[in-house]
Length: 164
Image 1 (cartoon, helix red, strand yellow):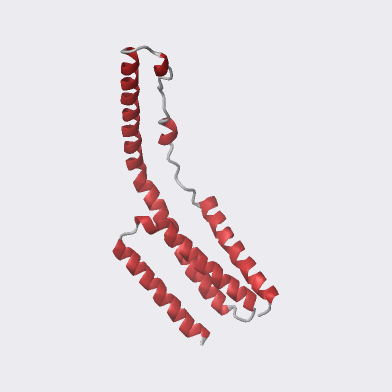
Image 2 (tube, rainbow, N blue to C red; image 1 turned 60 degrees about the vertical axis):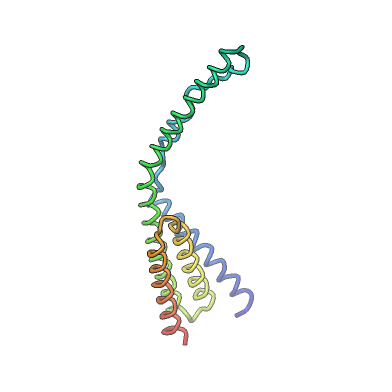
C-alpha cells in the first residue's frame, strides 16, 4: 500500500467518523439542561464591601444564604437531569458501537480496494472507541468488562474469519 492509499484511508476514516457524529447530532439531539440557565444568580448583593459594620457582616451573611439556596437548587436540578443525560449517553454508545461493528464488517467485504477497506476499519474502530468513552463513566464495572469482552471476541472472530 503506497502513501496515497494510506492517506485516502485516513481521510475515509475521518470523514466517516465526522459523518456519523453529525448524523447523531442531527437526528438524535443531545438533551439540554435548561434549568442551569434558569438558576443563574438572581440576587447578588454587590455593595457589601462598601457598607459599615455591622451591616457589612449581615450583608455577607445574607449573600451566603442566597448562594447556598442556589447551590441546593442546582444540585436538585442536576439530579433530575442526570437520568435523562445517562439514557442519552447509553443510547449513543449503543448506536456508535453497532455502527462501528457494522462498518468494520463492511470494510472486510471491500478488501479489493485497500484504502476503502482500511478507512472503514479505522473509522469503525474510532466509532466504537468514541461510544465507549462517552458512556464509560456511567457503566458499572461488570458492564464495562462484558462489553469490552464481547467487542474483543467480535473483533478477533472477524479478523480470524476474514483476514487469514
